[in-house]
Image (cartoon, rainbow, N blue to C red; front, side, top):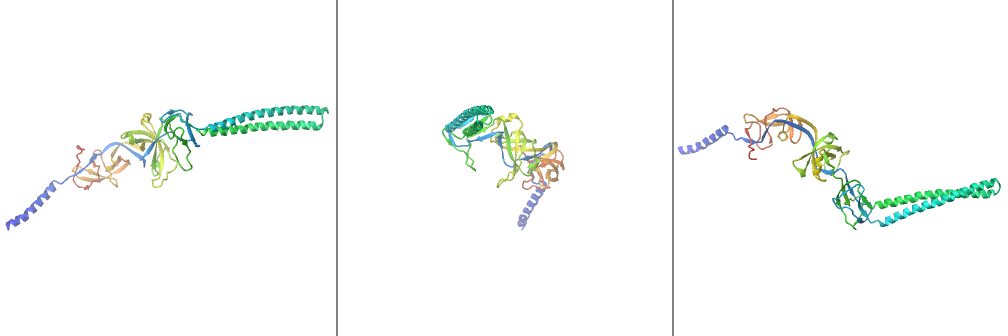
Length: 382
């Protein structure tokens, strides 16, 4: 009997001892913490999708008519000057038409000279007939005939002059047709790509169908970033605002820049958020040496900057503008704060915290609640 009582009492004593131990030595929740400090807080706007590094000037060119490539003076990657020929199509027939039109202009000029000489001679003959008529040496009919002949030859002279204008227009048309077979560099640059080889046949893009350009020309040493900004943030942005540009190819490095253009309309693409295109220029010339066209880029456009203010990590802020404070007693305290400027990294605190206060930076972890005992997580092994 005594043994059964002992067996019943022993577990109760163990449970009471465990409960008493837990009260005296509660399990502490490990939390990541940081101290409230002073620093710079910026209000920024970021792109919604990846932006792109572009050349200030880029020409994707193809001949406006089809034909066989007869000359490619430069290879891919070559530096070219303004006006240099990049591509020439076979154009012997058009060259012959141009030569014929040029000869036509020369022939028209010769005909004008002959017609105008005849007009001058007929005018002199008419003047002589007028003098002879005054002395009644010739009849009225002969005078009329001389005057009519002078008028006809004068008209022929004017017609020959008009014919020169016609033949010159034909020459210009032949010249324009010939120029359509030649691609020239509109600006000094680097040939980024060539889609074609000698003797290959190229055709212009059909209406509504975009084909590869034959020559892709890029202006070197001048780059910009084009980034889509959500339509909600677009009214806050204006030309001249400073920005930070980050590139996936150069992780950990920020490129200073500034806004140079804000799009004049909202881009409405199916199944995508409506955005406004914003262009930014790099402000440090030495950064341009490391860039390539086509790099993906992200931008942070700085709307406002406040230096030397109390700030905390943005991830520490709960909804409703509150934080968990780890007080000197080792308990978690939910503290209301008043926030100022904020971005993805830091939030300005204007009331509710003091410099040096310890706050929890992971308020979403399991088991966290106001009033529980907690301790700072040991980060020495991280």
